[in-house]
Structure formats: C-alpha cells, structure tokens
Amino acid sequence: MRNVVEVSHPLVRHKVTLLRDARTDTRDFRALCSEIAGMLAYEATRGLELERVDVTTPLETAPGWTISGKKVGVVPILRAGVGMLDGVLAMVPVARVGFLGMYRDEDTLQPVSYYQKLPGELAEREILLLDPMLATGGSAAHAVQACKDGGARSVALLSIIAAPEGIAALHDAHPDVAIYVAAVDRQLNERGYILPGLGDAGDRIWGTR
Ligand code: PRP
Ligand code: URA
Image 1 (tube, rainbow, N blue to C red):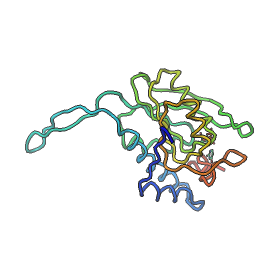
Image 2 (image 1 turned 180 degrees about the vertical axis):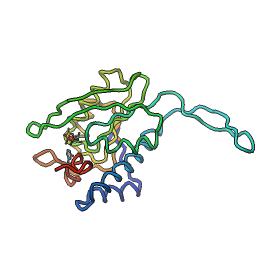
Image 3 (image 1 turned 45 degrees about the vertical axis):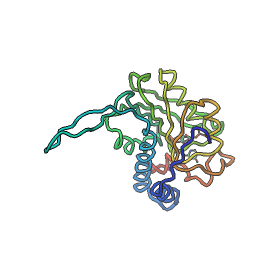
C-alpha cells in the first residue's frame, strides 16, 4: 500500500496483541498505547534533517548531530489520541502540541468537531496526527483538513490499528499523508468498528462505559 508504513517490529506486534486482549485493564491499556505510539513516532521521524555539530565530552571534542530543518507538531485527536501523546513526547520532547476535538456520530459515522487548538507556525512543522483507530477514515480526513486549513504542509498520521477502508478513504482525500500503523486489520463491521480490532479505544483508554 502506497504511503502506508506498517511497523512490524516484534515489540510492536507483542504489545498490539496485549492491547487487543479484552482482559487487558485500563491501566495496562493506556501504558501499551503510549509505548506503541513511541515506536510509531520513532519510525515517523526517520526523515528528520540533521546538522553536524561538535560536542565536548568530559575528555575531548566529538562529532555529533542535531535535528535541524522542520520542527515537529503533535496533534492528538480527542479523546483516544491523547492516550498516544506521552509516548510520542518521550521521543520528541520539544514538539509543540495541539488538540482536535472530534467524535464520530454513532448513526451516520460522520465526524463531529467540537474543539480546535493547533500549534503556531504550522507551515514550518512536520505534523504528527495521533489517533489509535483509523476506521472509516472520516475523522482522520477531517483532522488532516483542519491542519491544512491552518497552513500545515506536511502531515503524517500515527494510528495503532487501521481498517483497509480507512486507509483507502484517507488516501482518496489526502494522498500526500503518510500513515504509520502498527497493524492493518481485516474489515469494518456494520457499526463501523474494526475487526478484529480492540473495541472502543477511547473507552478502553479512559475507563468509560
Ligand atoms: C474513534 C477513534 C477515531 C474515530 C475513528 O473516536 O478514536 O477518532 O473513532 O473512526 P472513523 O475512522 O470511522 O472516523 P470516537 O468517535 O469513538 O471518539 P472518542 O475518542 O472521543 O471516544
Ligand atoms: N473507533 C474505535 O474506538 N474503535 C473502532 O473499532 C472503530 C472506531
């Protein structure tokens, strides 16, 4: 699949399996989301530009590198995306953070926006959009559009589980957006849930319902 990176590292596969397990409790679920998100961020930031610098060790001067070029902006989609934020910030602590509040109407499956606060200088940033579930793709496509409307020119989506339908929909709407995902599942059910999936990510992260 073009522009899709399925991160198949053994640690990711192991943690995704624990995440799917219906017996995994809220505390472990939240920790796993964060850990997997960190590994997705590691892959998604592979292309960041570096600049040569010297560093003084306690013994002598050593050649080194510092990140240059575009800065990173991290934008979790509320609520479930917030469960990925810590893990991504552990990898990129200087990133600026914005938020997009959105939920999926249970009848129409269309995204409904209720909050938006994006970082400044969007055009100068690599935006990492966070949402553990890419189901129909409606929420992700809407969130990418919000970032682009704010000036963003480079957006990648980090999701833990994606349905083929969601990947196709996001590609149709935004072919330039790379998707970093821990697992691509089989299909959606009639209520728009990913199969086999992990259930409702927001509820499992925050212990609701
Ligand atoms: C979930 C998920 C995505 C969306 C995916 O959020 O976190 O944002 O559904 O579905 P889609 O690809 O079909 O748009 P939900 O609407 O359950 O909101 P929540 O995070 O507040 O629970
Ligand atoms: N949102 C979720 O949390 N889970 C799904 O399977 C689909 C959308």
